Picture 1 (cartoon, one colour):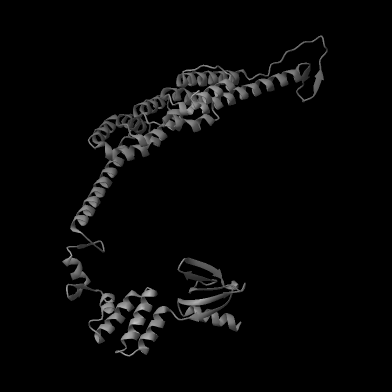
Picture 2 (cartoon, helix red, strand yellow):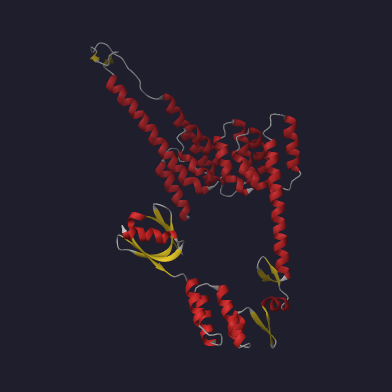
Length: 397
């Protein structure tokens, strides 16, 4: 109880640099702060909060500021060497203000001491010691944002800042006009489009790319068309998603047209992740679009997609055949029970998913058409032949 009381009374005295011993035996150093039921320990790398129940004891330690005060009081004014050592000690512990004070005390006793002059902020200009500011000014430098740089560097920095301010103002204006494009009033949309047209393309590109996923059809239509006109490379990847998944079919076509206008060299590769979509229709749209870019790099992926489609169709057919065979001479009653029909009664139930088969057939036809467009070859559904042909082409055989 006495230990606990002493601990909390000490903590109440304020934040200090201390030695903290945990119940686990671990000893750490840092500044402690009482948080009620816990103690915050701050160190150079950050802070940690410990419940008071985890702490065995806290040993007070003097702060560097307190140690400095003790040491400077112990030294005599004319003790040049002692003051120099104390100034260096302060620098090691990042007590810049105190170090300058100690160097100043050295100069009072030894006005021409070089280390003290430098430490106190003076510089040698010719055969004279001058202030740091006078030294930099004599070198033709100017102070800008806390640094001494050439006038040319300052002017360049000012120009860059002014350009940033201009770009920010334009970005704000673009966002305002894009918001107006969401209006149901055609007149307001036309006014917004006219305002946007007056802004240079290089300032619009970033905002337009960000607006590709806008919920407004009017905004999407505008940015799809404009990004295609601008041939903005950064728009290619997000436009691929929109060309396949935009809710509006005509906007999917607009996104696709923009992709063709941009003609990014990796457009076909941007389509590859969408070959794994669950929707067969989306996969077909993806494959059909890839044909327009004639990128041979995607051919191996398309062959793999063909193999997956063929295997899926095979699995669908096998399931239907198995279910048909199992149910061929049985009837399932409403209560779930089954009866075996006499052999003279012949039924032929068909469990084949014809709609799925038709979709998979369409997907395979699309893949084969795109592969043929890309490679100039046609190996039908023979996956091994496709792989062999691509390998031969790669090795130059």
